[in-house]
Image (tube, rainbow, N blue to C red; front, side):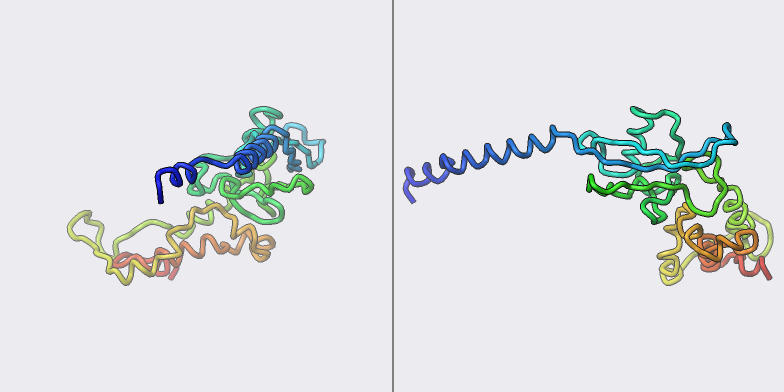
Length: 229
């Protein structure tokens, strides 16, 4: 290939240049035009007990909002309605604080992508079948009390002397914990369970029972199962 041909190859043609400009213009127009999404959010204020729970609509421009539902909630609280109440912390799916029901599914708002269809309203409720403190904030006291009841901490099998011996865990026993130790106790699974809805005062629920299995596999230590016996 001659230098002249290389030069021609590198230079964009007039046709390609015009097409690129048009594509850029369309993309810029999409970004500048508001893309409004409606969020219908559960509201209840304990300071106004005579007022029943209701759904309130908020309109958010998705072009000026992050991609996750939690981004939209934060934008609503910061720019539209500071009275909207919800929990949040890590924004990375680690702490479990922002657990709620989004479009019929219990999930974490920080890792739940916004449905970008502007024709569809996204409905957001607190976790189902739990007492509500305010708006999207459920009362987690019963859930944490159930977790505490299984004594979820490491205990020695014999004696109370600290530090005389290491309790090593084999690779095989460690692998048994895969799928168990990742639980962040967000309560999404427990509050999705009908048995937990109707018998929450007696049934510990899947989240807590999984923690039981988790500690049963702690090698060389008194297991929760032995505690129960």
